[in-house]
Image 1 (spheres, each protein chain N blue to C red):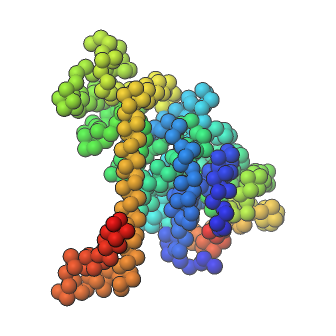
Image 2 (cartoon, chains in turn blue, cyan):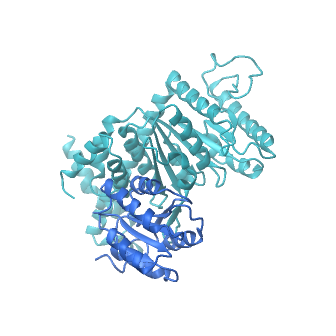
Image 3 (cartoon, each protein chain N blue to C red):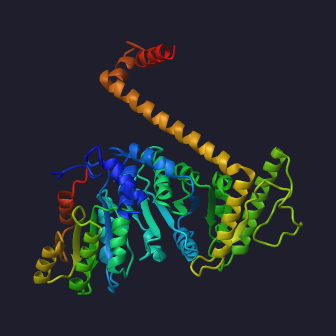
Length: 145
Length: 351
């Protein structure tokens, strides 16, 4: 319902707030940086977590910052252990229902399916055009008003 | 959103619910819906938090320093709310808010609440939003609130001005920065900190600052007729003058935020400043000045909104402007036409 609007977030009263987070011991943050900039240029407010965050840290940041979107970047292969913890944490705070959780990184199809069942909205693999991710978020972000 | 939601959110916030606090700040920041009712309901519960504003040029180490300060307060079991303001792009409105990266001490600790805000570019709205967010933290029961912002423009200066104590952070070797400080930030600082004091040139920068502050001090003293500057951080070379002098001379401290050196001293100085404000009654007078500014800002905004609505009802600014440009009417007549009824009404009800 809120597709196709102005870069600055359209008729929403505020820009989309997004936490871009690196979970676990994965030190590759180039992707997270690139996506943060792309989100910024799309008019999002991006809160970047920095490297090596534990799932609890991410949950805490997401709750305190009251973000619309949590974007988890993970390239270490530990997604099956770490991401469900983030999801559970958000659910504990009753924040899962209106927080869009997306994952970017190298995730095998079977795992992606599982993650989606657990509550991840979408998994974006290598080579996904930036615009596609941004469009997906714009279309699926919860309407909180 | 239902009407009944407002008290619930406030009740939850006052009950210590973190998410309610987060949500409240969101509403405040967006100036959306019932945020006015929220702030009104919170207001009676405010006034106890100690508010520190920290500003300085990009890369001076503000976030790292805030992180250390937060750790220090947490060691004393004090709860801390942090508002980190970052600039937003004037073109897309987007922003990358990176202050959280350096705030590792907050992680996993429920006594700390860090909130990032972008400057978003709504006119003067940032300081209003920040003041209200501070109220939310205050009502939530935070002992300390720290506002961190880049000291770049008037907007940011307005933001830190909402704090009880303003800390200005500079880095060594930034001779030009120090020069720049003259332009406005020098006047608002209550405490100056040369961070990265382990780098070359720290002493020099501190000395430059002190010199400039002395100039500022002597100007103020000639105005108020005062004497006797007090150095808080170093051994006072001209004896103990503190008791007689109730004017605050901004000290210049040195810290290394990455190692925590000097942070305890900074915290002590901040408390000293607060004590000074209370002793001299300045805390109260500052609070009144702030309240006055807040009320004025709000009135201006509300009046502007009212006028804007009225303008739209009359065909919008473009149409009015066209008539003025065509010499069909003039700006004063238009303003009178618009505001005349309001003036008449007010005169009537006040009779």
